[in-house]
Length: 568
Ligand code: PEP
Ligand code: MG
Image 1: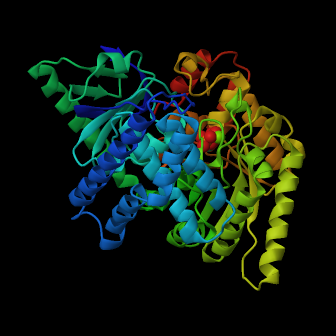
Image 2: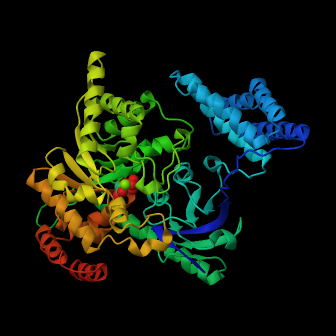
Image 3: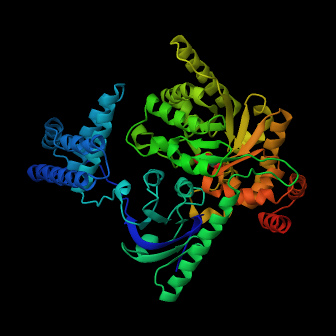
């Protein structure tokens, strides 16, 4: 039996579909037989065109004419004589291998388009990258799984479900997710929770042990995979699945109720979303607003940066859906484990400690300003608040805020109307938590990102399954940092919310409330369980309990005490 870390609770029974995401070697090799290398080019193009025609045919009933035309555009790109000539010439002149020649030619064309703002041309560059990727994979005979087009129920298995793979998943067909790497709070796990798909990560030897079409039971309640099972155990699991669904169904009864403690304090429960696709569930759960809109999801599943208009429409949609309820939109948080291939960021030895989040906004000011323009324009359609991720010192905040003022001025000069928004920061780096008393006077609110705060406090990569034992949300170090933040915020009349995964655990949520957190934001599907727990507690008791817990000295003792005190 294979075991793993539970990334999202639930059960799934079904057939495995393996994704082998092989790294492609694009290095230059000198070849001897130029003619056969060129013939490989034409073979790979033929294969690609046939594939695209097939995809167009099988998607005829699913897509409208405009979407289907994308396949024709891609076929035209694959057959583009100008590009083909350049690749051929490169191989002939330099006696180099095909993979290298394609990559070189395509990259130099894309580079030419880099500074062009014309949307049509930018889209062509993006299409060219996508098609050339397909041609290279066909040449190297790397099987491609078109995740977006999976139309049979399967359980996905991969060495790593990257954030961009996760962003393409359609929960209608993917009933479970399993991976070898990843931690409870890696971004693919967060997306799995967002989509409500049972998921297990950190499953050792997964890819060596399972095969395509294996029938398995994914038990993401006990954290295991069952590969050979009897009729009886299958029947038992079907019963478990039914009972689990029933339990979830029961919690729906409190959908309309607010999360108010027994002594009358309301704790707004907001939704974490990744795009407007998540709105339906958030509204169904009657979320008090959006506490975290991870805008990077918009940037991940594609070949180029979404332009201002596209971003504006997406933000507007979310703001309008929530009417006057607050919507906190986080500026782009990429870098680290969320790589955007098209940004071609230099490789860093320690990406989690590198140029990511707010730091990247400071080095890529054009991307930041475009996003701010879109946000300012959208702000008129609801109750927008904006926050910066990964702030580690006051100056970063001041610099980014200044850039916002510049963008405001630009809009004013052009007579474009906008509404200024509240501006907060995420507290996810210990340095920021420690100087919360200096940050509180200059920001409008704090939102604690416990996923990163835990990772950076313990210096333990949140993606590394072997370090899962250091993912300790109940550790005294974390409690003390959170308490420092809420105390500083209160002293300056500012609010603190928590939008890291800790907020979605009912017991941890109670602890956070006791520590002085005002609002909690979580994956919508987890709101009912947290609400149910809050309804049974008194705020006064939670504060007294947290006060006591601040002096405990291990996570184990803390959990024991919490469970004892929070039983209802
Ligand atoms: C966090 O770090 O807790 C957080 C909410 O941000 P993300 O998980 O997207 O890094
Ligand atoms: Mg974070």
